[in-house]
Every structure is written in structure tokens, then in C-alpha cells.
Image 1 (tube, rainbow, N blue to C red):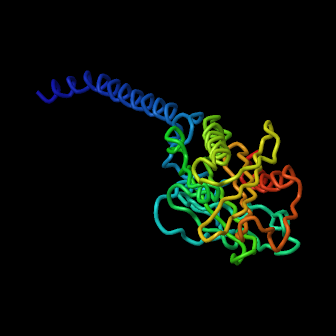
Image 2: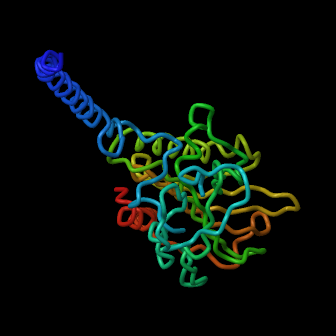
Length: 289
């Protein structure tokens, strides 16, 4: 009987080893299929437009409005950690993305501080200065793009009668290199904001608008005057650009008696030079050019 059992065992052993080898091979093939489909970082389709909830790449926002902190949401703005490295999920705009203060109009008089030092992240869609003065907002077709992936604002100047102030707002939609959809989103918001300025007299009765930049330029510039209560008026010099994945607003304004000239006369570089300075920092820091 012992001899029979031994013989039976010897006959079945090769079959068992064959089955085990087949199972191991099938598992290896399944593993390879999974890696091919998702990649080691589970990234999926690398050419798809970034989702709203995704955070900017490490080469994008790093320390630090417009709208959206590479997704802002409603709530109090938080001071940005300008210049600090951003961890995954951080929604700040990097310190290097802001305009050189020496390029802001009227710097010879006001010696503007670096915008990064006063920058605040925006939670939710930011309110651009032009929207605040013109009482306007993004159209329903564009509103869902108004939060982007990150947004921040920086205000300079003490304000008060006859004193100029400057504010830059950055709305980061994302890195435009993986997908043209990101650039299209930024340009859609840019176009909407441009039309809001042109229509300011409809949303802010009594406002006047003078477009100063060429119609076919890759930037928009205008001078807007908006009456205020008590016989005052705000004079705004508005600059807008959208270099690929970022909407960029620079607003310089003063409040004074309606019809009166500002105490400090307006002196500014050519519109094209201001727009170039606005975008050069983004190009260097976010590769947004």
C-alpha cells in the first residue's frame, strides 16, 4: 500500500507544478496590464485638461486674486507665504509670478512695494477691480472658470482722496502645456472681463470707458471713470492679459472730485510695456508664455 501511494504522488506532482506556473504567469501579465493602463503614478490620460480639484504642479504655484486659488472658495483671504516652496495641494501663487514693482505706473512717485509681500490667496472666485467698480460679473457661460486652480491679489498704496492705488490679481487656470483646454479657459475669462469693461456704462450708470490698447493686441488696456456717491469719481487705468494659463489684471486707480484732475498727474509707460512687464514674471516662474 505504501508503494501505491508513493507512485500516485509522483504521477500527480508534475501536474501541480504546471498549474502553479500557469497561475504565476497569469498574475504577472495582469500586473503588466495594470501598469500599462495607469502608469506608475496612476496618472491616467496625461493629455486631458487638468480637473478643477487638482492642485498645480510643483513648478506652478509655490509660495505666496483675481479669482480662484488654483481654486479659491468663498471666505477670508489668507496672507500668502511668498517665496516658500509649495507642497502638493497648496493653492498659493509663487512670489516670482508678480509684476516687478518698478514697472507699475507711477512708481517714480509711490515707489510701490513688491506685490508678493502683500499678496493674499483668494478662496473662491476673485473679484477683479474692474468688476468691483463696474458692478459686473462673469457671464453664466464663463462663471464656472472663474475660480481656476489658484488665485491671489496684492494691493499697494494707502488710498484716500487723490492718492493712487495699485492692485494686481492673478487667476491661475493651470499648466497649459499638457492641454490646450487650459489656455482656452484663461482666454475665455480674459475675453469676458474685456467685454465687462467695455460695457461698464451699462452696469455702472454714468461711467465712461476709453479703450487705449489696439483691438487686435494680445492685451487689453482702458481708462475708466466711474461716478461715486457724494460727487466723487474713480479714475481707473485697467490692464488685462492672459498668457496661456493665467488671467492677469493690473488696476491703478484714484478717487477724487468728479471732473477734477488728480493731484498726482497720471504718468505711465506705454500700454504694451506694462502688459509685457505683467507677463514676463509669469513666463519665467510658471513657464506661462
